[in-house]
Picture (tube, rainbow, N blue to C red):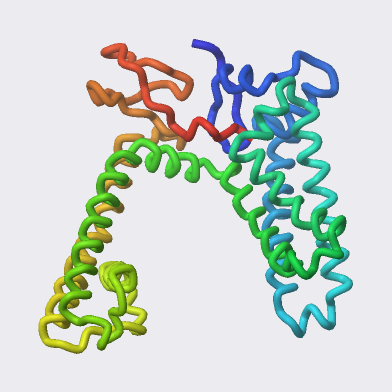
Length: 303
């Protein structure tokens, strides 16, 4: 087993992660890599904290700019701040790519795409101002809110939750398939019971009602009028309460399997013998030798 380095998320990453992205051997690229992708140094920790505050502040600026009154009065100042943030995030994105030996692997990863989305709308609005008839510039501004997703790279709990969701994805898929089957059947029944006279004009509309009722949203734009229809709606609501608890239980069980050690680092459980306490970089179970499931999605990166 190779040595580990501390990633930007605070979780030790194996040498395989560094090899996959192409950790530089030395020089200025290695110094930049240690600051951006590792947080076991003072410079790395300060970089992570500064970037977190920049992300939060830039998202707040975008939200403030959505108010018409503030935009009319402080639009110029908010636009200047937005360009400052865009320049900083662009420089960060370029620095991430330049310090890696395999930059395309990071660019195609989930975090790399998020980094690109954090700066792309601003540049797109600059280079295509004449496309206002086809592109809503305000919508482009709001797309900058994707920057908030960058925070997931700096909080270890995000990776633990993502690992639990990925580990339980098949169970969740089976559950969603069951829910889809129920709403299709119940929607069809309601279409037959209520009919177009009571707003259930077709089967898809009836399925929409079944989804909103099972999820206990109850928008109210379509409501049953007959006694039988209201009885079915009551059953759907009661089923919905139990249905919403299933995904929570599935993910909670996986989080329990991915127990945390005292230092806050997830310890993966073996899917074959359920042994725990494996090192973060381990690939195989220390007891039975079975391959361990990945802690986080394969598309994620340590930066």
